[in-house]
Image 1: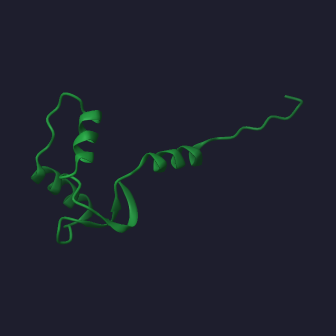
Image 2: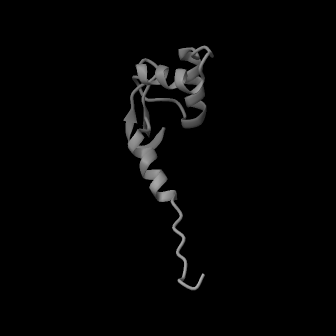
Length: 81
């Protein structure tokens, strides 16, 4: 998840969460809807109506690529080295 000035839809119902879980935790059962709600409620507080949290959205591949670029370390060497 990424912090943003928008609401995230209750992603448990979306296939994205289920696909994400299967990729990250193969062979383990997908947690129940109530478990997912409880987990995020502890982190972000109670959701707005429609099970949406203000300020978060699903992280994208573009977010990961941007983060990788920001984390790159550039080392410059003098000709004498």
